Image (cartoon, rainbow over all chains, first blue to last red; front, side):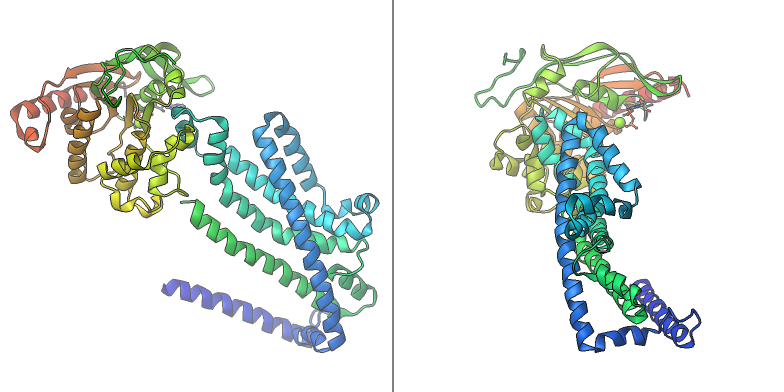
Length: 250
Length: 274
Ligand SMILES: Nc1ncnc2c1ncn2[C@@H]1O[C@H](COP(=O)(O)OP(=O)(O)OP(=O)(O)O)[C@@H](O)[C@H]1O
Ligand SMILES: [Mg+2]
């Protein structure tokens, strides 16, 4: 108990000192003019117009991220189940998944502008980034279920379907949700990246236009909001993950 | 499906046990490049219908491997296992083998009740709640049917695994150290309870145990194994009257048999290549 309280205290202290250091470094201009103090970054939100701008950008990005997340997760689910139940597809799907992962997401941008149009590129890149962690988590949980489960299934003469639905699938639930937890922030990042290729609104757009117009504080504000969004997605899914873990694992 | 021969058929079809015959089974495991473990060498054991046999032996002598062969989980290199007249695979397809594994293999997402009924659901049969309650009561877990395995102690988990093994009214029960994590008192009282059930059900049973006391108290015959390669070292019949309650364990006959098995076990360990 005491240890817990201390570690929380230390973490808080660490976070606060970083923020204070940031403020001082910004005010003193230690890292140049492109590194503003925190107060200036948050000052951006005092302006009603930019508040509206950011609200619109955040909701556009989150909306696109949610869609990307759902699409990516569905694809991962379907393909993971396919690769597990249809051994002939396993090799090909694994290779496809890891090649997609090995190539930097941003390099797909131009391809998808052509294929999906600039407006949808954000969602496609978001879905693509979500896909990999979920696919990997789910396939490995399905493949590496405890040997005892297979033995049990064999000994009671269970059919493949029964063993899959009663043993393998529930066993894989925590890993799947863990994959979702990794995939959620990836969706947000993918969407922001994709927005650079010509979405009409979103945090990625704000970042690009701030950069082009040299509005440093606004750029930082957009970056901070992006981080808040990915972190929020992660925290939300972590709560769900904990619940799934409590319910399905030892 | 053809009826299993040697079946002792009772009115309610419960009193059914099939003969178990394992005939000169050998099994070698490959460890790595050119390295092999001779786990079993020409091992033969048998149990008559309704008979209770126990297998004791030093750790690593191949007891679990033998049980896995009897359950159809492992293919022997040579020799064969028969349950009645059928190979184990055929009997598992009829859902008539009950196994309690060394590492219980309970499902953490199911309650105790659901874990006990799991074999029925896996087999595609409708789970019989009344039987589940009966089994939970037998292993002393009536009050815990709604609990999850992780809320139970190690010994309680083993008891769930024992109950689960009996769910499908098996004609052969295979127990791999199911009482390992139990304290002596619980173990003894469970042993006595089990005997009552076994005498009622008449299920042929193979029990692997490290406890000589337990083997002598429960079994009609005790096999002592030696290791490297795993082989049968001695076969000791236990001629004690049943039911064998607490009082039996203090009789000279019982103690002599315990001594005899212990000596055989020591000799087996000495003869096991180190
Ligand atoms: N799947 C396997 N692959 C390789 N070797 C194995 C395998 N299973 C068992 N063995 C080896 O076979 C031998 C017998 O193992 P087994 O588990 O049957 O022993 P045991 O008598 O049940 O031991 P314990 O009392 O410790 O449970 C051991 O030397 C073990 O290393
Ligand atoms: Mg063993």
